[in-house]
Image 1 (tube, rainbow, N blue to C red):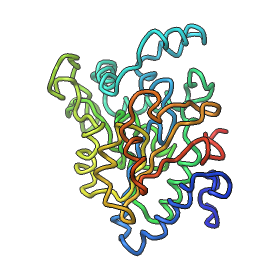
Image 2 (image 1 turned 180 degrees about the vertical axis):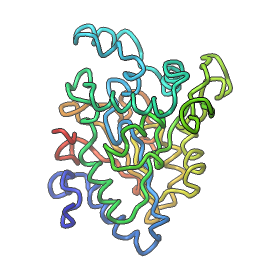
Image 3 (image 1 turned 90 degrees about the vertical axis):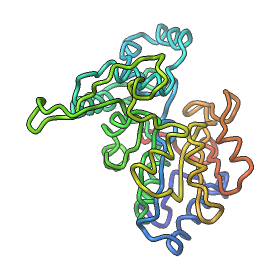
Length: 308
């Protein structure tokens, strides 16, 4: 990493950026005097934050691979006719499709999918759709002894299948939604953890929905406390689903930093997220707080994808 410019894919304010680059560097440089390394905790959302998430969450394509077998015209027609699955819907499908599989079998299948399957419209593997400026931010925070976690509304084991290779974040630092599992001593040497619960779409209880944990919205602070046991001092996300994580992290200007990724570049990626396409409560709140940064992909990023 070039320490003279640790974020080379980010534009400075003198280059037309919004000032987000300077604000992030200033926060990181001032953190050392306030927090010991073990307390420099940062949580990142995954979909729409570390990699792309359109036209549907990538995990949905893993659950419904038939979508990827369509030609471009049929695919567009299918996408227009059917609404994307919700986070909860994806996890229910996840539980149905891989019931009886060990976590190792599931992670191996997800890893193969991510690295060997092309995105339906961007014509490159899903693994190539990580954001280069965010990869640089991860490296910069790591160099400054931050403890980095992913806190995703998506499937925990799905994200764990590629987090080490894509982000250099070990699987034990991934917090996410999960299906119901149990220990099966008959599977493999020493037994295995197996995915067991068939989801019921009309159930009110999370376990009856086939979910061990639903890690979106209010679930994100719960997941953070369960796995880390401390509040983050920095959180990075992009949507309404991150609002409670942002609130949980926010300890005031100078003590914490909230970073909201705004998808406002329809030429290089997809344009959405700023409240023009449904509500974004995180966006709304960021307009009123100076230490809640809104990062413009159009104005702050020199490049978008690691594969560009």
